[in-house]
Image (cartoon, rainbow, N blue to C red; front, side, top):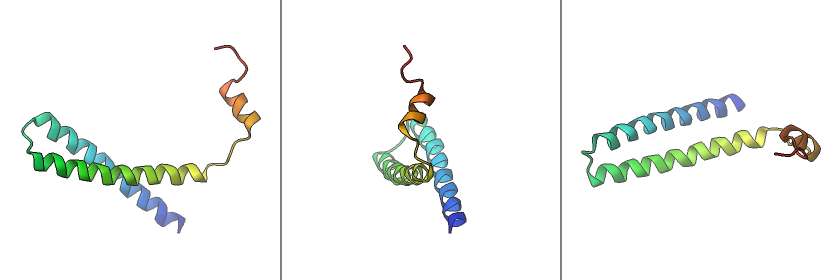
Length: 80
């Protein structure tokens, strides 16, 4: 099951990469129609939802750090 979830995440992130490139091409060309911009916004929104789901899923799999370990890792107590 974990392997399938990982494969799904890779696919979703790949789609996001493709949409980012397409958005750049469409916006750079400056010849888009309102319909193209609307469709792009819909696709980017759907992709963003998936990418957020991936990030939350991966974050949930990370071990929780205790406050002392986190403070030490971030250098708490030292002047900035």
